[in-house]
Image 1 (cartoon, rainbow, N blue to C red):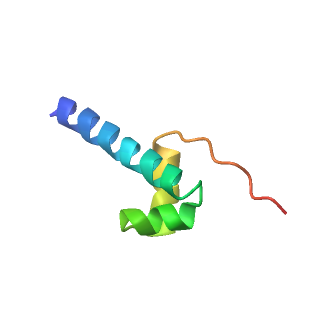
Image 2: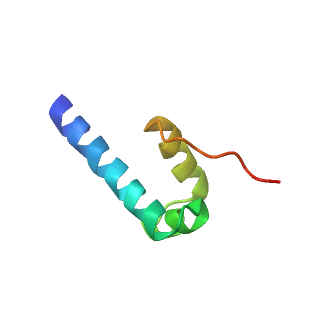
Amino acid sequence: LGEVRVAADALERQAIEAALARAGGNQTEAARQLGISRRTLTNKLNLHGFDRPRKRR
């Protein structure tokens, strides 16, 4: 079952990368495309070790 988890994680990471690319890095839009909340996307970004740019002020 560990192999299934690894494959599922890889697939999820690829889906997130693709959505972020389509959204030009906009996390709110990427979350909408994935059908998840922005908070869930943030959790998944942290889980998968994505580098998250700091918010510009």
